[in-house]
Amino acid sequence: MVSNQASSAETVPVNKARKTAKQKAEAITAFEMTLLLQAIKFRYNYDFSNYSLGSLTRQINNCLNKYKLKNISELIPKILHEKGFFTLFLREMSVTVTEMFRDPEVFNTLRDTVLSDLKKHAHINIWHAGCATGEEVYSLAIMLKEEGLLSRCQIYATDFNNHSIDIAEQGIYKAEKIKGFTENYQLANGKASFADYYQAKHSYAKMSDSLKEHITFAHHDLIKDSCFAKMHLIVCRNVLIYFNKNLQNHVLSLFQQSLHQGGYLLLGDKESLEFTDQKDNFLVVAKAQRIYQRNS
Ligand SMILES: C[S@@+](CC[C@H](N)C(=O)[O-])C[C@H]1O[C@@H](n2cnc3c(N)ncnc32)[C@H](O)[C@@H]1O
View 1 (cartoon, rainbow, N blue to C red):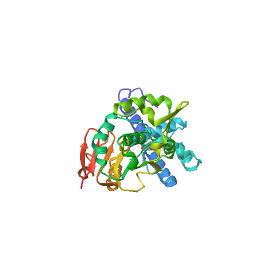
View 2 (view 1 turned 180 degrees about the vertical axis):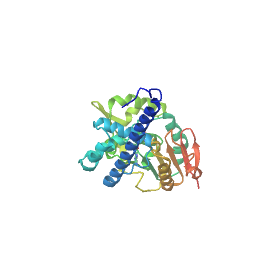
View 3 (view 1 turned 90 degrees about the vertical axis):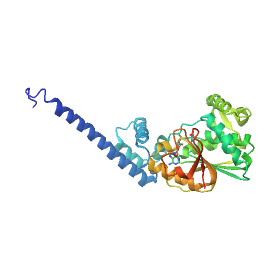
View 4 (view 1 turned 90 degrees about the horizontal axis):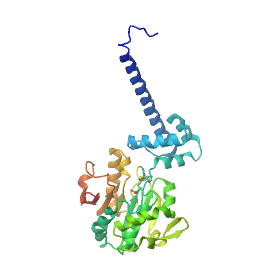
């Protein structure tokens, strides 16, 4: 029973009690998160433990809302026991935001620095890691074609989300997106007409087969899979931002091992080699556009 006497002094313990309740709730969520990540690793061998906590929490909250679940504890049995649910969960966990010629000035600089240098090679290997639904890899293929390089290129486009890879391989995009893609292509100083590279069908646009011929789409998890070929260029934009420092270092080391000496690395505009273990293994080619070159 609360006594009248204690009215002014009462506020402190009540606040304290509230704080403790909030802290308890946070501790429970952190515990549930640990269990969830263990369940995913145990059942499907996907390891999210080194993803940045902020993005992990956001994606999991989106998933709870979408499937009308009260808390992470309700998610765990679905992951462990419900057939097909993990595929849907993975779609929620993988942020697939992308577009053709995203950040057009990056493609401009890439053409003037990297592609002009790659011309000296008879055969060129390129890896797009975390290619999502493929828009970025088709953009590069277009640019390589315009520079007369595509016929010498083998491009590997990989992601850990099989659903995205399927869409990327089909290369079919909603017609309503084409206007924005065309504007980006022009800003990137595309040399022809963007319409040369797709066939419009009803409300869709299908990327031309001449681009696809040089691209191999495949599943690859940057956390657990290793290098598979020596590359002249690796494009991995807007993927490392979802990882913590340890995982960034692990993935950058994989890229360093996968690159030929003098090979290039292109990262996203919020990503950098500064403050990473790989800083001294690369030269900065274009700081603002995040283009690096593996040094000797
Ligand atoms: C925001 S998209 C980036 C798309 C494109 N690179 C761009 O910048 O427009 C991030 C992609 O990283 C992929 N990804 C996240 N973790 C990955 C991992 N461990 N291995 C491979 N791909 C991963 C996601 O599935 C998603 O398709």
